[in-house]
Length: 112
Length: 115
Image 1 (cartoon, each protein chain N blue to C red):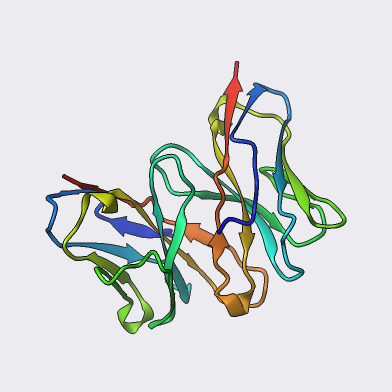
Image 2 (image 1 turned 90 degrees about the vertical axis):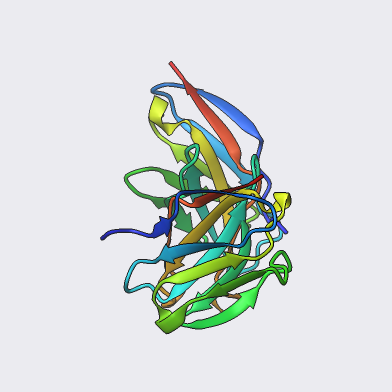
């Protein structure tokens, strides 16, 4: 069963920041939060992951609340090519197979 | 880095036929996962291997499904006596099982249509 809840869809203007929220209120202490995105008919593409600290890479930033019950993915300057389904995922602990448990995702539409 | 390769990309089969998909993971990755994705849904876990050992199977994996990973390299997923409900995208992912901080690389998937 999914451990994350996301809004089904969001719009963002090109060039603006896209802020995608995610709730994971039942996450356990040793479970990571991962974000992937999927463009139609392709495999999911890794974006970023974190445990409890905020993380930043060349694609995005991940803000995790102190209680770890929610997080936000930030795409700082969205482009039309960022239009995709974004999945917030809980990764189970290593001794549980380290499986990625996907939710329904948020369909982000970046508009000109 | 050639990434994770899945073949075929598309497969159309008649109901009742058997189909087999192949996944070639990143060579140094010792964990391999299979997921299934139906239209409009997120991927669902099916099974995973560490090296050649199949360590877990989801309840979604009925007796008609079997997966292997001989010698801990490539993996195959076979579906026997296909049903229309098996129509989906089948995704493979690989990772290193090393510590707590490892990433997953997905293939482009095999889209199965059962007619």
